[in-house]
Length: 391
Image (cartoon, rainbow, N blue to C red):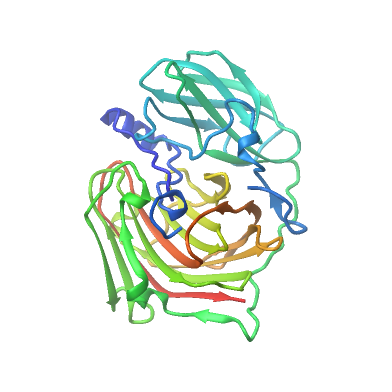
């Protein structure tokens, strides 16, 4: 999704950040964050976690969109949070964070759910600040301002203090009348590729998409995606289906295969399903952020990634089965991530987010994005048996 997070400060910084797990949790390219077509918090259904709210109502120093490390940000390249990790934490945590900027830093802010819990005129490039987090689920991030009045923020981390809420949304069995789009990897007329719309650190023209591949394949006709170019290049592959849907339930089911020789060089693998309906975009973006080691989800209205605390290390060789169940809720004013399944292990997400406005015509689509790491190693990914069921 649209969130370039890399820098060319120097080889050392690139290396250090790459291997110290700088949050590049989103080098992707949802069209909702770009000028090309392709790709909150409010009241959700009972049992669903609701986050965000209106990002414009955040405390001073806690606003802004996007996150992470980005050489297109200007004087501030990014902020990296070393701790706490996303997921379950005690009520008292220490926020350790480092900022990368070409101008002097003038202010640090630590934000919890959009409100400043620490703010100081501080010129240090790193902070270690203890904060108290109440019981429940919260979004935590850090931001800095520099001498040019530029501001940037880190990734968002979902912090759980105390007993998590129940998460019991299973993958449903679609009703008999559901619409099924099968073998979508073969829809040649609907697929396109771009690197600029991925908005990564580096734009590349070294990419291909090859249909009807028999090896590796499960159906005998897989889609091969290739991304090359300089380090931190990102390429987005998207399948756009124009038209208005009346459905509110969506089950996306597919298989993914990475070139095992370069699996360790994938920084993240992004997998997006989205709907545009009546001037509103519902971007259910997810990515396995190998660089951070966690799954991340996308807040469409807030224009930001969220590290969920669900572990996602590099995948073992072979085909991997991914299922994602999403819904449009509250009269299609919000969307909810219900459940993510990887190789049979279900992760009930239960996150509800607000939509964002768009002037695109009604459509739905799926997207895959390949994100290089600091080595610049070319990447190959295959997808097969891609099915979208809606009702």
